[in-house]
Length: 107
Ligand SMILES: [Zn+2]
Ligand SMILES: [Zn+2]
Image 1 (tube, protein in one colour):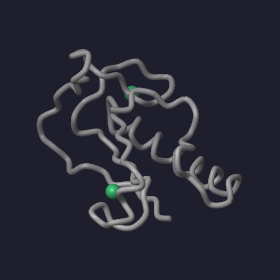
Image 2: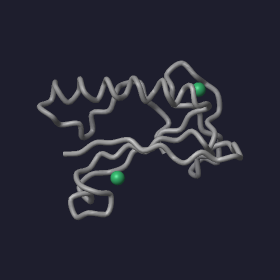
Image 3: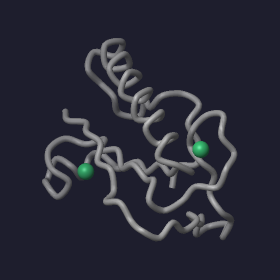
Image 4: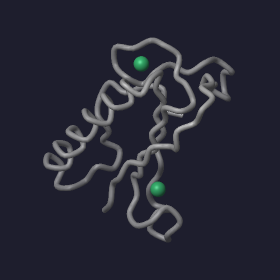
């Protein structure tokens, strides 16, 4: 079981994140924030074993989160890291499907 976080490379142009199902701008994933998310501030969460393209990875998934600003991305990373550790302790090392509560706007 491996879990890791990878931040996307910084981009110069900040564009709004659009939900392709609704064609509406996506909101920041930070709890108290209702601003629109922007493209440079994305987090991909690896909820799978092994490397992304390995055989084990097909049994897991990726979760994507988007934010309005670097500040909120960092807030989220800090809190989700703590939550992940606590969640893992409570569930015997299992993190699958047990993301921190209160998160919304998953792609
Ligand atoms: Zn991955
Ligand atoms: Zn925000």
